[in-house]
Image (cartoon, rainbow, N blue to C red; front, side):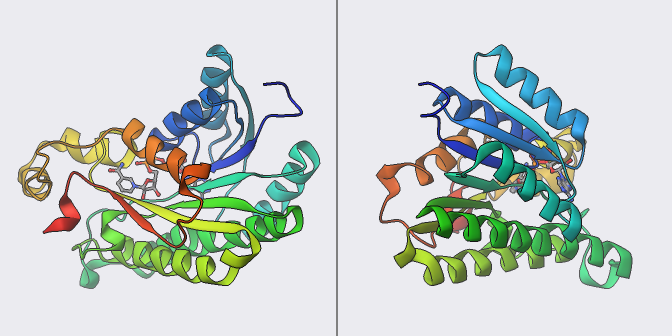
Length: 251
Ligand SMILES: NC(=O)c1ccc[n+]([C@@H]2O[C@H](COP(=O)([O-])OP(=O)(O)OC[C@H]3O[C@@H](n4cnc5c(N)ncnc54)[C@H](O)[C@@H]3O)[C@@H](O)[C@H]2O)c1
């Protein structure tokens, strides 16, 4: 596949655990990958790994919680890429396992600003671009805590918000060629999940016990679900919250 044929995807939070593995997976399928992260050095490390594996990628530093930085990101993408065939809205913050009464105003605002408003803001830019080019696929990284409850109040609330945004946008734009779906991972042995796993405490044992598969998932298992949702094999799949959770959601 040469440059003019390569499909393009934007991955936000592409410097992190799930994002970087997903970038490698899409590059391996011939996509040119725009890797965005608030940590430009982490985005660049993913790009270096993609290029070492023979793929095409470019690093972009941007805070999706900031309207001006996000607008600038999409202006640069329009100039550099011209079109976006797919987008994986994956950037997100953990909530620190904090229940409602213990969340500070500051932590609540930060979680809502990045996880929910940031995802909504990226989707607005993506949908606009995709409608203009005649279609595209958007996948949001939600969570099993976007479907089920969790004591982690701000995280659970923002992920439920992402689930709602996914379904709402899918309904609005399905007939116009833009497919919007989400993956809902359970505990994944990467990024935020790895921090939980490393603690090895009672809370981890209780959380793991909710996964009938008896193990955490891998970032590659999430990446493969995103690949499928962005493929033509998923051409009639709209507004779906695809659990990648070892059976957690079946309780
Ligand atoms: N790892 C898990 O167990 C798990 C489970 C369910 C859902 N998720 C979701 O997967 C996504 C990726 O998480 P991860 O586990 O790979 O963690 P991670 O921390 O490794 O990745 C998140 C990335 O997002 C970036 N980021 C944070 N704020 C940003 C901002 N404002 N603008 C741009 N980039 C920003 C971070 O720098 C980081 O590289 C998150 O949305 C998370 O909620 C993870």
